[in-house]
Image 1 (cartoon, rainbow, N blue to C red):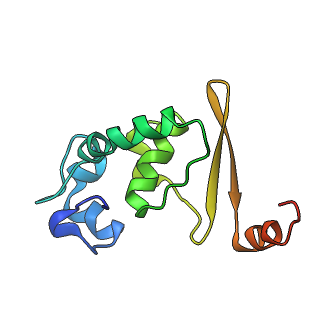
Image 2 (image 1 turned 180 degrees about the vertical axis):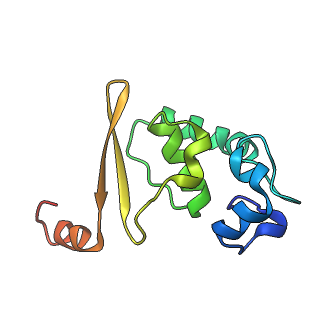
Length: 122
């Protein structure tokens, strides 16, 4: 499920920043009015994160943007406080391939995916 932004659901980021600057300044520990903080989302995702990390085969996660932003921060070792600033391309697949302690990242667009489906390299 996406992050519950309570009374801010559907509100543009600019309006949230103006009306609730304390929440926007510290989204990890401050909850949206009637909703969740990023810490709440991360806590909710922990069982899934453990499963993904223990899986030996490739995993695909299809989720709402807010969840993908938190997962992206986790796997790229960025602070979760940056999650609201993470820009993920719509209608694409972001591949995170393990490389030692880091991950190699590539974004596959619709045209890349069609090329792969036809047996080509993307």
